[in-house]
Length: 158
Image 1 (cartoon, rainbow, N blue to C red):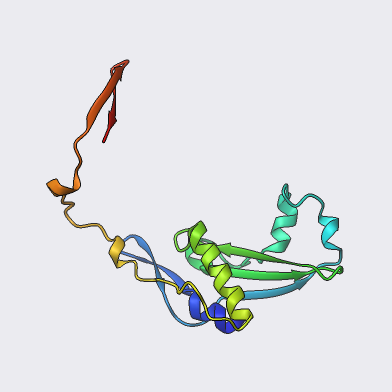
Image 2: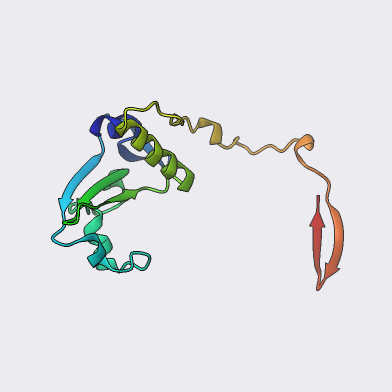
């Protein structure tokens, strides 16, 4: 599992030009295995977890004082007495959004089962850079049509 984690997650956050950036050092992600002294059902309604429970299911970096000292990803697998387990993840939203997290989980599961990864990570974010200075071409703007006016507010439509 460690190979799959270290090969698909960037490892170090840094500030570059006042923007959060990732320095890929290939040191691997933080991966913790824990054991709980209870059954999974003892947690109760997991759709309404309380903070004390959540804190125990995701490893906390004890020396981190700010976001730059927290790894971009931390994974903890907690085994329960009943044989069940929970995967607790802590990821930086600057790196992964909801779709990215699900793609990662699916790729991780495929790697663990020795299956080919269906969705390869796309880490090139240069296509998201803004043009400096911003330029708007006339072909990119559609004309608006006023639908109605209410209380000095015009409702517009393409």
